[in-house]
Length: 157
Image (cartoon, rainbow, N blue to C red):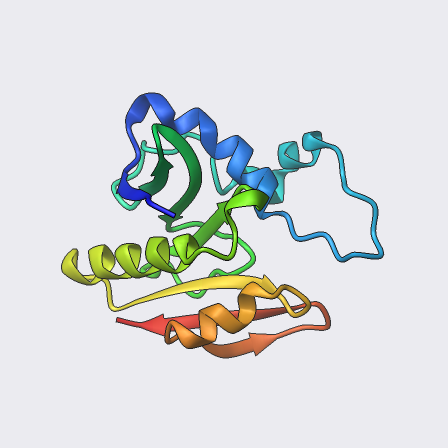
């Protein structure tokens, strides 16, 4: 599948709501939550006023002029928070575009940008049942903490 990875445009910031919803991992035995779940405070930290902070960086994957995935980072007190110098990742793709290497390409490009900008590490949280946890490990993230449901992962740049 042909795709382009590019910086998110300011007028596209609103699509992060869609990708935040897509990023909500739902185990197969659970019902899919309503989209309003993204209005919860613990999820709004990922997108509220995106672009207003110097550490807000976003990339999108574009297939034939359609944005099909996004990765964005910011320093925030989220599930994957390590410290106030470490950006936390959020990433998702529309379901029909998963499994083509687009997510891996988005991650690699964001890690490259973070390194160039002088960041020493990046973090994320992922539910243990989420298939993406294996991809993060392959990308160089390591598990630094965990609870019953999720891993906190760190990638040194």
